[in-house]
Image 1 (tube, helix red, strand yellow):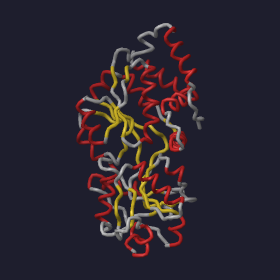
Image 2: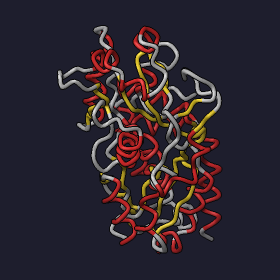
Image 3: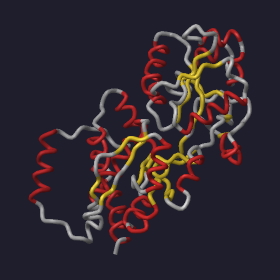
Length: 342
């Protein structure tokens, strides 16, 4: 696992000075010279680290990458189809399957950006799960459970859910309807980082908490499954129609910290993939090669997310440090990308 560190400003100045005095790189070394790339990143900041890694690697290939745009899912998928945005490396599939129609024939999905897979589900603090015998979302229909998790006094258990526009919002809403939980659970849809920070503070004060999360995410570093919290089951796998064929993928063996094995998460396990405008991709085989060969270990994303949550928000420096510490591997990706452009 790489070591997170911030590049000192003096070192950065020396790096800039060196680059200014270095000989110009050839077209073979920079196949993307004079080509603009408009990258996007999602509104959840846990994906910004690997977005920045790929931004810096594209720059090494000579591409002109302007400031990264932060977009909600619907805005991105519409924009990449039109070509207003070139790409992002935060396509979560199959949870983003509802957006596939928007990019049919106009954008491509290339995986996998992050190795090790990604899971989603609902978690409860371990102490409450044990004291109240909570193993499933269905337990939140019980009056004693609702009362314990009712933080605003409305008679419902409070669940930190997903903000509007996120793919997980659609599945959570579907769950609430399918499991008949709307009269028992209140969905908190405020900004996720702020809502989770409030939940963590409540946990630290001894209050019960119920929340949705995904991996990689800083939450599972702050609240460790099996120690602080537990993954709970859904009553049965029930997915929206466009995900219905993925029922088996929503049950996963060996989930650390789950109340059962296998764990009935209720969300299909995801891969994190790049989504790229097709016309751009056809004209830039170097980018296709980079995305097909590159892959960031999920453990390194966990480490960066934990550091970011602890206050180190220098994502640019963290990405540069990761590239430096993995330079031999990264150079194989870049060499393949340059060869693809010949």
